[in-house]
Image (cartoon, rainbow, N blue to C red; front, side):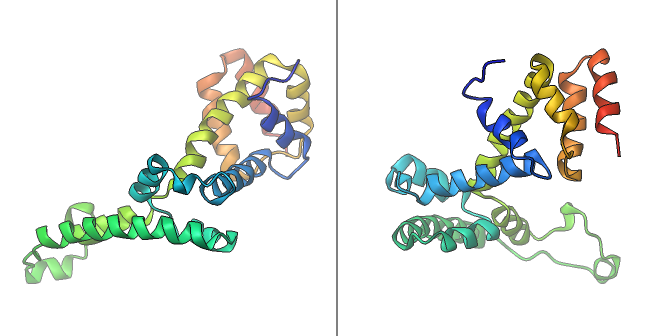
Length: 199
């Protein structure tokens, strides 16, 4: 089957004979996202991109990778506006916060439910896991899973490569099992699962 633009990265990942094609894709997506944010395109200078990065921020892992990327000016500009927005949000959280009264019984109960969670701690946890790069990878990755099953159904050469491959890591294997239930019919699933279950 002739390759289309959206199938090339998936075919490249399978042809790389990596331990897991989807791990290969995630590494490529992460590098492309870092290049987009800090690379030669200078997207950090565009106001609409800066609005998105200011709002989403970056997780600890990607913050470190951004510093390792080496674009000091780009990092400084991104962080300047992001931290300015973060401080504004933080001030609103602090202004609306009032410590709840706790009873002696509540201290002994030790509940971890979100209803008992401190609102500042809940806001901090939300901000800590919000990341522009993670979200970009997640959104694009979903499309690759759809493309994987489209290729699996349409392209016998691709299907044979998958059946002869080294397999998938546990994380991506689970994603493919969910995807099979969504994208394959009963006959295709009857063929797909035994092929995936080989040890």
